[in-house]
Length: 448
Ligand code: PFF
Image (tube, rainbow, N blue to C red; front, top):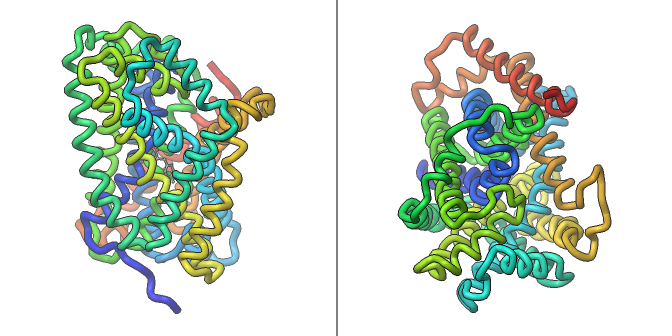
């Protein structure tokens, strides 16, 4: 048998996991869904979800991954042989496939805008209407979105095919510190704009009348999405860990970094949106409509704009590689494929599956499933349904099959672990399961 690859260092692992968590979810999606679902009350429910389910599910994924040293399907098979639990892992691999197929489309948009910033600056986007028209023309073209989607998938394949240490870890070590520097620069710019306080109010002063059950389900689904949980990405990254890692401490760091970046990105974007007098509910196009117009008006806007889209591209790449790694690891472990072959073959297949999403704003926009275009359909299917269900079943698996005692034991290897009794751990896990279950059912039935 081949020896399993491992992370080269503790910092390398944490940076890679933060790289997976911090992505388009934080900088593109969080602001636009916050705008669509009503602002601060939505943010509050999202933060509650992070606390109640983010930490337990992350601990479960890392523990199962490290314990089994396997991909999501193999991991559940090893811990619960001859049972249907492996389906949790199988749904995860499928979900990684689906998410990456449309995620790469948005990542391609960000790469294009980064290029546009360098080549032309933002002077042509003098109002959100003009910027919006330019974005519509670009995103509905039959060629450019597909090409940029191809470039992004190529980058993911390039990194993942090199391996865990030399590919994923090395690139995260370079890209993640760059990302933090850029976001700090953008925040300073946002906060020093006149009228920035309206943006802060929108983010932090809740109006609960806007919080419907559907909005709660979106907030909870987003908590899973933003932390890369519920589909085995963190499980896969955990499977490259050795016994030395303190899983509790690392998880806390990852959660704080991810939530911090989402809130900081929210501040940077909403201060600018409100200061310039624009509408926050811009949908998926928010950062492509409103922000280019803002950059065109702002002193230093060309540089800020370039930095912003570079930030998005970096965040997308470090997450995209973790999505591809889930699928790749499955084919390496379960089917005996080489890393090179698995990453190239499935990277290419994911590219093909993503082409209809890339065209769903133009040539294929007439194709509507459940009132959504293909892009939105894949997005909603994965983050509103598959991730919460995956997380829910992982918690149930831990309570009823693997047992909370085994989880606590695994957490103790490499650190002080969680100093709580098995009884308390069981109660906390039950609370998470009930929270996910109730929010899910209420959201699906559209209560409230
Ligand atoms: N966490 C990523 C983001 O917020 O953009 C998206 C993501 C990556 C989701 C990896 C799931 C995953 F497995």
